[in-house]
Image (cartoon, rainbow, N blue to C red; front, side, top):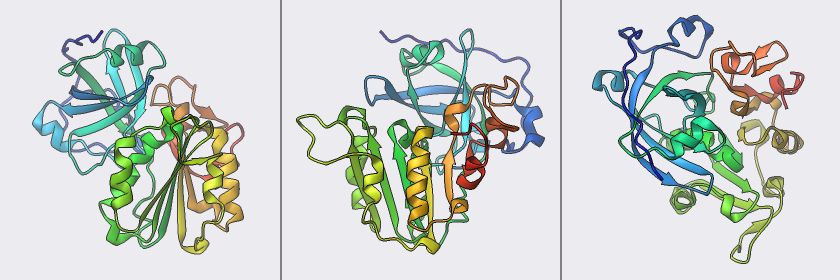
Length: 302
């Protein structure tokens, strides 16, 4: 049963005079600002994941809101709490974002029952981003496992909207079963884009599956790349990083040219709860995006 989340007022908000850069600690004094937003549409992706189309209500704030691929927002539900969610859409649409949310607790359960027209709050965007500007002129491997396709969509949109600035683009996606595959309605569109290659694999096929079967690393077997001219972005369960990045290293890609997102470790988004710390690093302040060299040298990162 869907519910309507009522609108609310945040009396302690300040008036923003300019876009705030939340990517560094110096701007964290502004984390209390809440963008009032509306759920305009929802898409059921699987039994547990739903895509939310969200629009910032105030036209002025809508124009000021801007994010970089890989960043996240805190979704605020007054009376219930807030959760960190990676942005899963193109940053070319100011004030309109998409969030893929898995039902996994009180706040996300309420969100999954929210009807279009419900009002929510957004804080952010926060965190580091994928260095898509640095990747210009290079080939790019975009690799996702399971829910990792959600944060990967932002760099996919960014790069495919600027294909003339990049070399060959490969999207590799793996899931446990065919029913766990997300955004299946976009696969054909991605395949039709010139110089973009999409390959999908599942671990446990059902009677309807006619595609590849196995671990996601199987998609890298036999792939010809120019390791000195290739960057990789990897999103998914942390255990996946070890195997995928090890295989990429065997293919000759430097660890400094592989980038991973540790968004699954997020909690409060501003380094206060200490639940995301990895050694001396706070994922929400210094991440969620890291190059693999930094991750492999951080104890307990993966």
